[in-house]
Length: 373
Image (cartoon, rainbow, N blue to C red; front, side, top):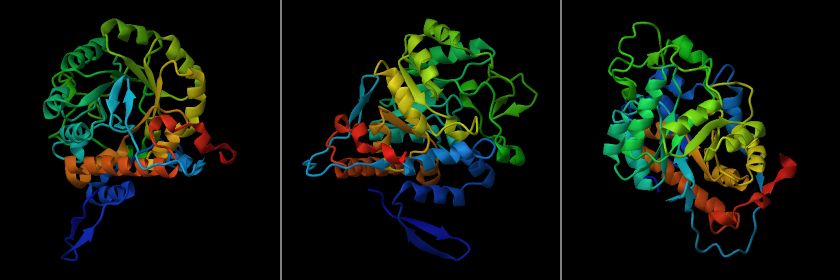
């Protein structure tokens, strides 16, 4: 379990013990200690932040139907994703710019995820390179999150790099033909500080002298991306392709028809289209449409072990956390990320047991009370 740490208050001149008990404790710590523009960047949602906030609130509307007298003296949280066993069904979602939160950034995240034996989806917009991440955690289980650029050679080169480095899947993010309007980033004129850069594109865009958007030249993402680009990607690589950003049964069916290996039900943490559904509310129709033909995952709003239990009960194979990872980094780097994952693991194990489930295969929709939805 997590250990207490010293919180030194410079203004008061004394130290008090704080105990990090739940993910909200890390959130409060990060908000207090990160520079305002950095906190605002991580916290940002699009427009009025309705979808961002609903990602969390939607879990609170879902009730569980626990079963009793089930002998939960032994419990097993292990599962598999794409055929690889992980210690529990929580991985790391792709989030940008970890070095804003902690000097070693994504290298610390990679080490923590390797230690906890789960899946780390590395962001295209990492402030450490894919090579540095592999060196930091050589035995980690990693997927790579990909955007498609107007200059397709840029996307092709990174696909070949990560495949050669042993990344195990590509996570094609499809909900950013254009970047959502994040008001505080505009107000703060958010930019990466001069000592940081999007390391995977070191030297790629150096001729650019125009405006930047989140560390790369503006207008580099390709808004013409379409389903045919899934076939283009399949022609480049043997890696499984997982599509991130699906929110409807229609697109879920198209994903299956185009031969992808998985879907991440995601609204980009509420950072793209405001007014779309919370991911947990979108999950059921996608699971019902896919009918087990490919694996379905989810990100957005996971803050407790019972949130994980609810997502699995509604058909997710695994969930991924985004913002909590940078809160952990801001708190204590690699150790902070490990603590976040350990708390979720412990809470999930406890929620499972209290609901009468001994292992993840016993988690199903009978656990969910639909009348309250």
